[in-house]
Length: 215
Image 1: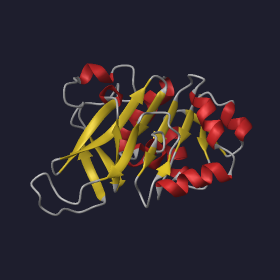
Image 2 (image 1 turned 90 degrees about the vertical axis):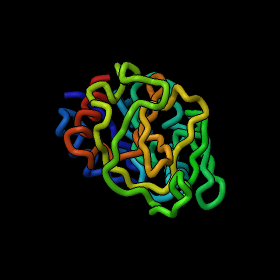
Image 3 (image 1 turned 180 degrees about the vertical axis):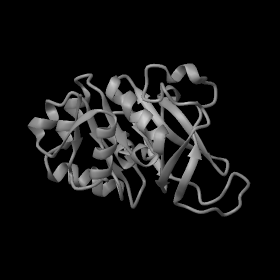
Image 4 (image 1 turned 30 degrees about the vertical axis):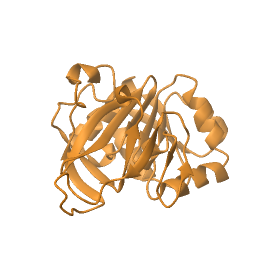
C-alpha cells in the first residue's frame, strides 16, 4: 500500500477522491492536522468552489505554510481542480486573491466567447480530450502523472477559470474548449496538478492517480 494524505480544509470532494485513491492501492488518510500533513509520503490538495474561499480556509486552519513547506520537501504533491489553481500566484476571480505561489502564473476567467467570437457556455463542464501542449510530444509525459495516458484521452472538467503558467514548460497537458486553450495539467519537479477531476474521469483518472502514487 502507498500512503497518501488528502488535505481536509473544508472544501473538495474528499470521499470520492479518497475512494479513487483507495482503488489505486493507496492507503489514504484524510486530515487537516498540520503534523500529519507535514509527515505525509504523498499529498493531495483538492478544491472546489471559489479560489478565494479555498485560500481563506487554508489560512483559517493554519495550513497555508504547512502545504508550502511540504512542497519544499520534494515529496509528491497533487492539486486537483481549484487545488491545482491555488498552486499559482493568484487569480482575478471576484477580485484579486493571492495563491500559494508555488508555480509562477495567474488564474484567469475562461473567455465568454469561442475563438471565433461566438458566445459559448461557461463554466466548461463535461468530458474533454487532453493532449500535450503545442511544441511538446508525448515523451514529455514520461515520469509524470500522465505517464500511462494516451494523448486524446478524455477527462471530466467543471470550471470557469483556467491557470495560465508563466513558464510554458510547466504545462503538462492542454484541452481545447471551442478554440480556447485550457491548462488541463501542470507539472514541475515534485508538483503536479489537474484542472479536471481524475476521481470522476473513469479508468483514465484512475491511471493518473496510480501514476501519482508511484512517483
